[in-house]
Image 1 (cartoon, rainbow, N blue to C red):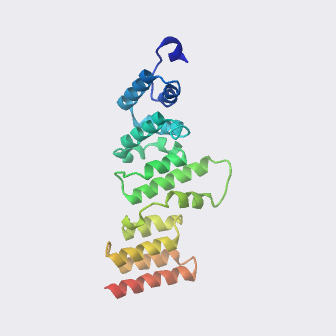
Image 2: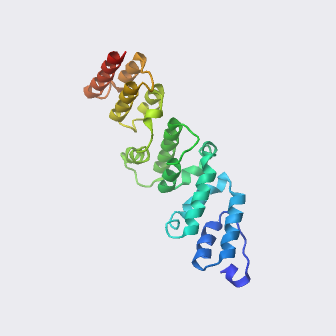
Image 3: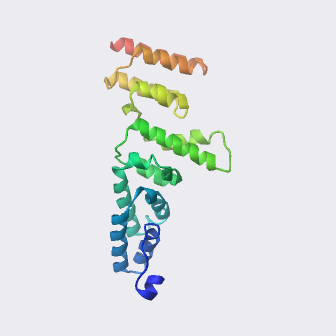
Length: 220
């Protein structure tokens, strides 16, 4: 409204998400251009997460909002490690968080997992409704597209397995695939560590690791 009345308005990264939608809605190309120019010149890690959250309900409706989301994601692509070392990413909505994680980021898959777990734990801590299965359900959604096969066996066993947020079966299938393809060499010590970590669960878990050991012995 200020722009319509005076022909000018202050531009900040915090106000731009709303302004670009208004500029497109009211067909104000000069304001739209000014918003994009300012945003691309002043992106910074401290504001991109809040900008994405503000755009969440509009990027599917306004082309300009979708374009701004893409510009922010491109900015994050090469700065993911720095972003995830800041607390601001914890405030991302789940859909925007997943949108970032689904891109070709310059971080390892095990780092992605750790970031997912940190985000999920924070959301649960902030929730007013306590559900003992919430962490498992949230991590099931977040890790659906996690490329476990790219995580070295020792990290699967020492980092992923103890969290109990990814099923033993999925980890076993990954280790079997790694052994079959020769992507990683599975050591006997890895099997013993798996057995030790799952001994308190059930006999099926132990039998599963026996299967992996048999597979390794056959391929050696």
